[in-house]
Image (cartoon, rainbow, N blue to C red; front, side):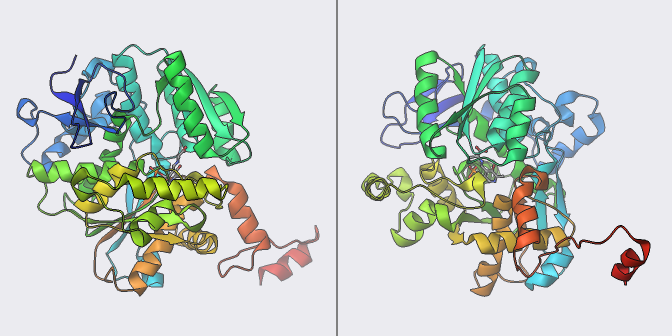
Length: 446
Ligand code: F0G
């Protein structure tokens, strides 16, 4: 039982607290989301972020090698013995002046945080290492998640590296094949539900409750602790400086929530001087956050979020029998479970939200590719969103920007191939057919 950290309900009117040895995905008293809270006075947190650099020299220690656990004092909820790691978080922040030039951003200012370099090819591994470390601490034997693909791939990888069973719930026909192939290979028990992600999310919560299975969706507060480290690594790679903007795609809103918490805590600890601004980008076909934040003006409001506005919005979706649709299947979600935590992050980070079309997403994806880094469609929503934010003056060309490319290019080859083969997009690059003849081939080379 860790005394350094505890769980607390995010609802200020409740604020109930629970030990970290309990496995909870909602407050048992009021049903709200839970946070992990630390007793910083009892934790030996370094005086400055750059002190973490000492761990670069001790990479033969598995926890110092991990891009998550080398920051372990900032997520100190379990003992080292139960920390599960498969070398996650070896990701890069690429300065991309080529793309910057295309977008009209000054040289040296646009960075791409490529989370596709994780063991399962997406940012999810940052969270899964934390969730499975907690699962190991509490002695869980089986895990489950609902997924648009990446969570399931990551869960199956971690579950089987630390000996837990795992079951994946996916919406039938709603998952990119690259991701499905991963969870099958990693031995995940896969259940395809005739429905979308939101249907799966509801079912898996009930299944986990009834069968006492460890849920690893981002409702799990321990998972989000791991995802904070994406921000720590951005700061690390900027020479321990904070960027002006973080841009992230928004689906179930776990990342944005974790990033906001990371900056809140770093500021509280005096480890950073300023908090960057946050831009969360929805796909147009799954634009709940954008609708609620921009049109309905829903705000964190000190934790007193207007539940009536959310309920009315969801009732409208139900009445319309609405199911989200976007080529960025990773973020095809209309009832994001972390909505309230994301509103808190937007409050802390003076955030903005917008939605981009599928056409904008596939064009941005190809453009990122042209400048030397691949990503899956959802990740490209960041660059598609950045174009709008530059155009309307929200982001200035000299500001330092970090876009989180959440998943690997090979996760969803169908979207890529279709774009290049069929679309008349400005960056389409279709293969050219040719006879099996040297002269004909040489003609094409000119
Ligand atoms: N980008 C990618 C590549 C994702 O897989 C996801 C979420 C997101 C962005 C959205 O992140 O939920 O933190 O806002 N994928 C989940 C899954 C839902 O099941 O793999 P979020």
